[in-house]
Length: 331
Image 1 (cartoon, helix red, strand yellow):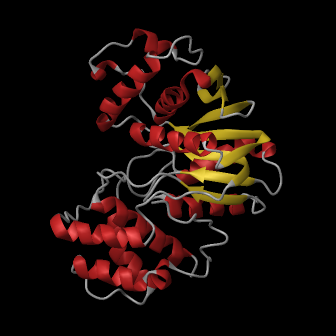
Image 2 (cartoon, rainbow, N blue to C red; image 1 turned 30 degrees about the vertical axis):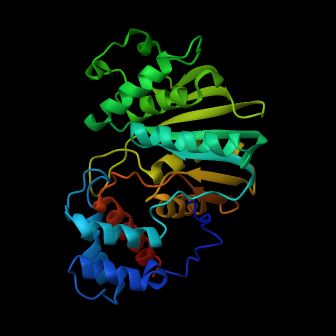
């Protein structure tokens, strides 16, 4: 069942921390993990919980290994905190849609979520509105090969599809031969083609003076609207405190504003699509970057599909840790 929309400006006041909002639930999580009392000092709470945020979402450095009934109880708590179920946006018109890039399967799920919202007339784009898919140079994860193979087969099933990358024409099984799709940028292009199929009208890659891909501009038919432009960004890598260097939500939004900020008019309404358990934190990150870059006039709305059934307990804990850290930064 879909829960109410999370709008960073209206539902979650910046003066209300995750501890204040979910103090009892957070203590229950601490009890289940045998961590004692939730510290009253923000710095102490950050110190304890930051171990959950180290590493990448699917390969955390800290393994809690909560199984059986303990995981079930934790999931109930995560759900009550709005971190499990899909989040629907308010109905209406948006000036632009921003889809946050991720793993192959997640890319497709997020794009299908957008497609369903438009097909069911839950949302629609402004006449000059565009969709931005925030990909980048993160190397493909070996775990993505199965989903990559499935999407390639979907795309190859379409006829007369002008946006098919040249490499697809030569792909054969097994999936281990899909070396051409080595980054999140490549996977983003593939997911768009797999999701929208023959609604794709054209595809053109934009490069810099050295021939490096900057973004792909795709024209496609969305619902009953006229043809829409989708820009798939290839954000550069940045250093991270934990984990390997790659693009982040923050750096991707900065790349978006750098390349397309002039096309985003004042007081735009932007729909930010990720998926749970990341929706709340990504919404906060995006709004903060917009503010820091002088675009506090932009109103953002966060939404997305629910968490994958296979999402590890550590992923939810990592998101809680990141929210706690963001709250502490405001102190």
